Length: 274
Image: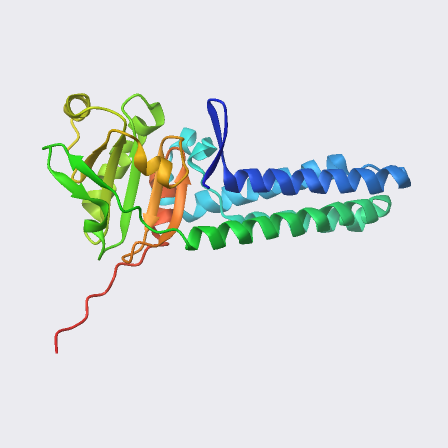
């Protein structure tokens, strides 16, 4: 399951696990702190804020070439551009300062952080195990010329499958980014699976946007989204050459976040002929 649906809203499962860990940390910290007359709530919030800021800053620095001087792009966190390791280190440093300076918070804060880290860590480990067990769906669709195409025909090279629709604003915004990536990465298949729309509408969209993209498929029943348990758009799936899911991204991709996600894919090296 890649997302949890709440009516018209969808939350990525990874984000839901993070929320669960934070809620657990706050609850345990509050319970322990209440008995000792010391509340760690503000400290937990500040630690989270520092971790998020450090993770974002580290990501922007690493992919500065993609962001350049685009200030809006730098502060637009909707692209999911964070470096978790940097964020964890930043959070640990901040937590260490609190534990050192605030003696009254040591036990409730340490208790909350310990429980939150354990629950969050177990949740992310389970998600990773589920991710590595998912394979490319065995489905057939039609291309813009009306010819049948099976998804498994793309096996043999790493494959990026983008689920999108013309009515979806973030889908439209990320299309030029994906189009450029398709041209720049010939060793990777980029497949654009439209969810639930007709051939004429999709063709008119590409003509209006002046986009020329290969491997555009029509999934009239939105079967791919259902098969990977993601009903939110856009969703981008990253498969290795054998069709094993390596990564996924819910929401709009920027040049930086797409480049970061592509690092999980290693083009299959062809064996030399004897």
